[in-house]
Length: 180
Image (cartoon, rainbow, N blue to C red):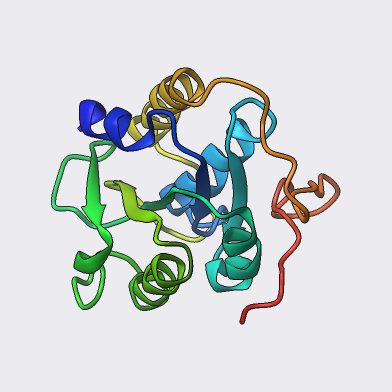
């Protein structure tokens, strides 16, 4: 999986879109990874939490070549194990509570930008309200943070709307842009 990820990100303008609910245990995988990557990678990083559709304008404006949707999904694997899922496999797969919007978002992004759009998913242990990230998912975040920092070196993009809000729940989430 890591070799495929590397080949899909190598020398490409990328957007990393963290998706999930940080208040629901391992569903916070995407937002947590996005917060850790913001300001440390040469890519546009967006912490969309549960509303990725609100960031479509920002993503299209960035004109990426690759868009990585990062979310906790039911993969049938051991907790913390990761997989790449093609965008056309998102519809109707029952992978995520965000599956319908992810499929529509992925299709829209690809149609508007011709970007390579795919999901980088992790198998959650728990998505119970109020739970913390599980140790296996924390380990996956640590691993991916190191890998993505190496794969996407350089100064991060300064896209409009990439400011962080550290004073409230969901801190580190970019301000939403109007969806088309």
